[in-house]
Amino acid sequence: MTVSAARAVLPQSDFDVAGVALIADLSGALYWEAQRLLVVSDLHLEKGSSFAARGVLLPPYDTAATLGRLAAVIARHDPRMVIALGDSFHDRDAHRRLSDIDRGAITAMQVGRDWVWISGNHDPALSSDLGGVIASEVCIGPIAFRHEPSGAFGEIAGHLHPKARVATRARVTERRCFASDGDRAVMPAFGAYTGGLSIRDVAFTKIFGAPDFTAHVLGDNKLHAIVASRCY
Image (cartoon, rainbow, N blue to C red; front, side):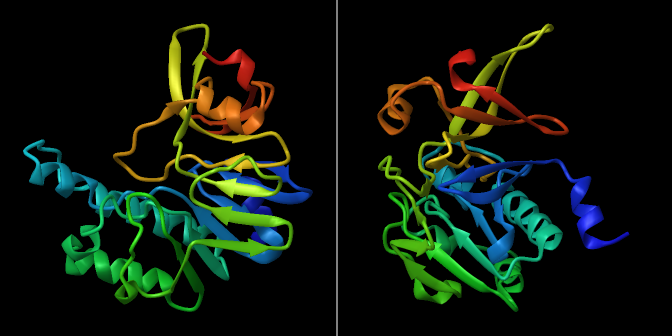
């Protein structure tokens, strides 16, 4: 099977931002095929250990689970560049709590490709020993990659962890989603322990102006494009 044929059967959805064709992967990653660029947002690595330090005990497996999913999507698309769109680490000291195995997994994923860590509100002062480069934002063609969305044309951001609440015949379900109106997009959180904010929240109205943007909802086996006004 050719690479193009293999990708054709992958659970993904296509949409444009500022005229750029993008692939929304079921994992919650975004792939710009023409640039061989993979984007993920809000990994929140070591969130479990951060909570444990405050007496809130969570299973300490979130970092390994998140990095495992990231390694799988990198293997699937084989990008030339990876941009981690901010809040890659849950707090300023999270990178120091990485196990040797998890640190090695990050290093392995960086081999043979460019890697950019964008600083976020949880990790504003990233360490230089993580590999790759650190930036506040990255602009490629008409697209600006940054952590916090401003609503600007051509912007792809994270930070808000968009979720859509959708009614089906059997029940009401809540899932992570990409939010986009064709001019800008907000990415779902990629981390295993990340929560979410309803796309009907006023924070999204400030970005998109009205709930007539599209939620590309991450389903069990495929993405579902649903107008935000149809969500709860």
